[in-house]
Image 1 (tube, one colour):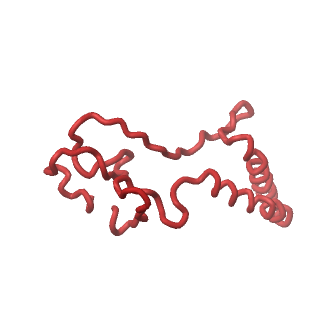
Image 2 (cartoon, one colour):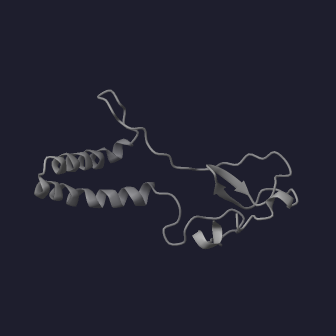
Image 3 (cartoon, one colour):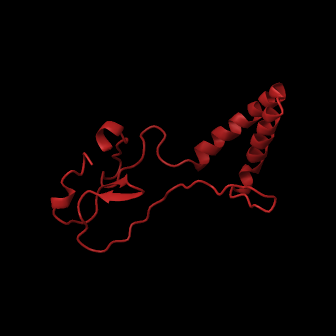
Length: 129
């Protein structure tokens, strides 16, 4: 709201800047025509609650999934030493998962539309929201 405070009175223009707002996007100004915008997003996987539930995790990460489940079951059964050993095996897999499957820049933050090639800006709560 801070960056686009004058949205209601802004001149209609081609979309060039935007932010997320209320489970949708908020453009920097009203759109002057119909446009198609491709947006990548992450959603929470469906909860697996029965034997017939299908995992949404890719096969390459199945071992990570199984080790995490095994460690959690061991913790529930109060087998903390064994669970710790399984979590030690799991840790590098979680790091690899985050690096390979994560979205957005690790050092610079997400790319903001309209910044031009090679110029990125990190999202900041005090400035962007």
